[in-house]
Length: 191
Picture 1 (spheres, helix red, strand yellow):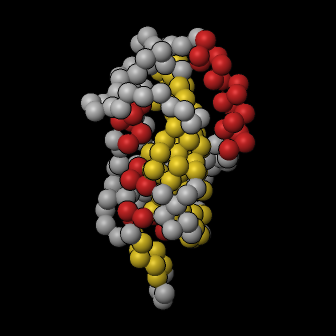
Picture 2 (spheres, rainbow, N blue to C red):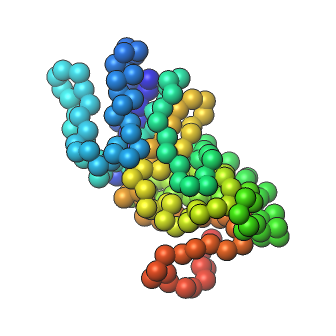
Picture 3 (spheres, one colour):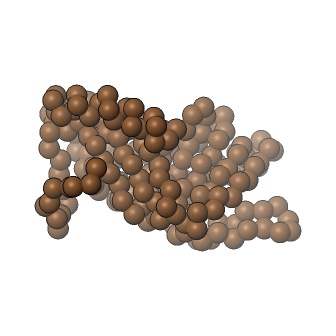
């Protein structure tokens, strides 16, 4: 098991656990409902060890063949971390014109979105979301969860701390979405 912890100071800590029993035990700590709210994260074996403030962790990437816990909002079947801006822009150039022309919004229709997360560290993450139209509220689903989980290739999961998201740009296939109270109704000039 290999773990990369991306902090808000722009640095990344790299850790590993090769003992299968300890890796299995470590998986219990990766609960999306509490990963960023269960107190300080202590990583180490003996001397020295690291104490990390979970509020300053932007995201955690875990590579492992073990089944890892994930949590998706209602109506979302899969969230996949893209390899970077190049893959994101290639998908966007292909999908965005189709979404604008053939918008979906009826219950049961395909839901698809491309999301760029700008993090407090100055780095960005790119996600591809798929599911079905239902009760999903894109704005609340991005910021209203304890952790955003996404699959990473070839085998693993990324856990994103919503408290470290500075901006989320969401391109989507829906013809209408439900916004929370207090939205600022203005057209975006920066794309």
